[in-house]
Length: 133
Length: 292
Ligand code: SF4
Ligand code: SF4
Image (cartoon, each protein chain N blue to C red):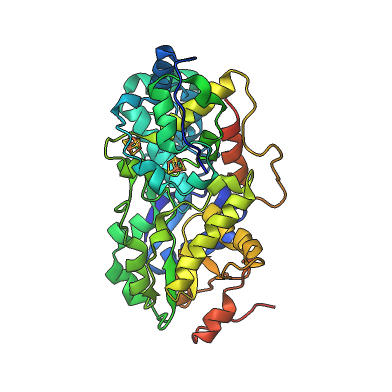
């Protein structure tokens, strides 16, 4: 379950917000924190930050979001994309955060050992794409 | 006989042969022929959401170029994920010619993709080309008394730009069920993600999701569920069978094409499921012979 969020002035960077914006093609500043994305996300229970909180950290340029598990629990299901009243494609923001983390050489925060036995090929292709930059 | 170019994709060509077998037979009965592309490759399964990641559109472009070489502009898919990836890549490249040019430059001596090939999901072909009334005239074994919960998953109806039906209130699967004589049991879970490829990294998350999906279907009185994606099907069958050991309702799932085959008096190819749908079908007077 997501914890209450603390904002601090340390490590804030407008540059980081811009990189996420560029990579995702989404302006994080459109988000007005209504929380609708979080309310409907089928994986919110597995996340350490709610989707709306990920958006908030990106808005204030807090790179701590790169260490969060939440983007890795996102399945790109786009339930939030069709519901956001501000037209933010949150799944794209999640992907940008994952990619920025991977491109820094960080290990993907999915469960490390991927079981391959008997799994459909499309599951393996899907998860490999998520875990590689 | 009408015909349409057909792209199986890895999921259908591998573990979902029963979907292809039944789709082909049903279309044949409706006077349509699926013509498999002479060459094809994986579409990449998941669509890349990054703006700078042109590499990941190469797979879809190669597939679409094969269609263009046949001088055709439509490509039939059975798998929801292939449908989505092919359509979204096509849109992404077509809305900015510079992207398309860069991809073509990378493809070097392969033919250029010019844009404009549209992936068509079988559900669209049934609804928009063939029509429900043509389907209805072929039904020889109405699925009367059978209660079926449709499961749409994500990629048929999301994102909005390529949705083949209303993202929040789709009806195409319910409509087809009614044509087949079955009783649709729509649930709020029918458009909520099953966990998709996380089945490879986080099976417990998927087990929790398919438990919620099958509980909603069981609460509505459904006998079984239908899917249109090999990955949803795997999760709602193999993963649900695991979850059923700790209390999830053990509801069978089949591809919608299998139910269509059954209603049209064709072989429904129901012998691959982990959770066998045949007992519940037999209980509803729809016994299927087991081949020796
Ligand atoms: S639904 Fe949209 S506007 Fe509301 S919190 Fe989520 S991203 Fe922000
Ligand atoms: S796309 Fe990601 S954040 Fe949005 S609802 Fe789906 S899992 Fe949650």
